Image (cartoon, rainbow, N blue to C red; front, side):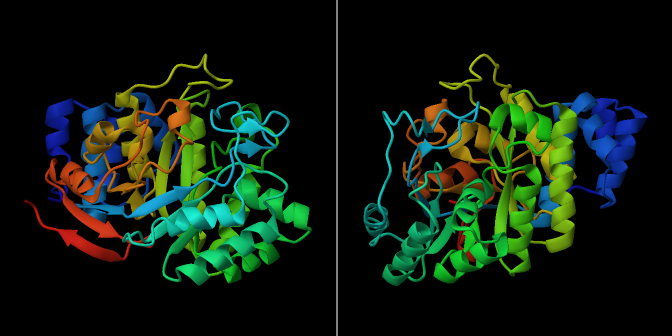
Length: 380
């Protein structure tokens, strides 16, 4: 299904400017576009044009495949020392109403509930509280691995690491090594928000800085391990801020090659300090996916997190550069549903995920966390 290496069809369909034609030429030639060209795509490119380029890139990298995995989430706490303006999930540490703080044994019981299911990954992240410290998590990871050695642990973000390591008085390198030795396999992409520090200070003041986020991932990659990356978009950031965010990720990926996937996360305005900020449209969601796919030429995968944007928009995104829908989740996350995400009870069976993928004539592929193929599903 890879498109021919030509811009003629785009020119006829879109009557595009010479500036956009030059970008299309570079994309079809496999050349990297610049910062300014990325911003230009946001400001001037129409959805159909972006979809054509993004689909070309995604099919060149991944053919007709769409990936998913069998996973579930555990959120150890929604109590947090931070009060990010965009967050609808956390409860301040001084106001614990509606909050929860699970013990190691309580988390282990949640893991054991999946003993008879073919899940391959547990995703662990949540708020930041003092008692869930370095000893807490190393103990937790060891017990999970002791109980189910083959379950991949994808856990914690630089926001959590920065706080935990500082409290434990260990360096980033020392802390990451201890976490890995205890059983941590890979890192999710959360906590990135927007890297521009002025915007970050407004929406997530007090958390780790952009440089600290990038440093922690780089150190993890240098250990020969992998992680994901995210970007929170659709709030008070500009197009330039989005491209700056992706540019920093692209540069780090050039150095390490350690990122598996990039996941754009849509800002949701329910029950948070930024409720006055309107959410962007589905069209803007699709444009953002497409530009992410075009700009991040050294990322193998762009993920549409269906629990955040809804299964219908996620399905649409498969024509705009995405090749991964995340996983079954099994209604185990509240982080996005509490913010007003489309999926208030995020749970999809294997058959439902495969149906979404095959419904747009894509090939459904079950993967593990590191994109090793577990099973390929033939079109019904």
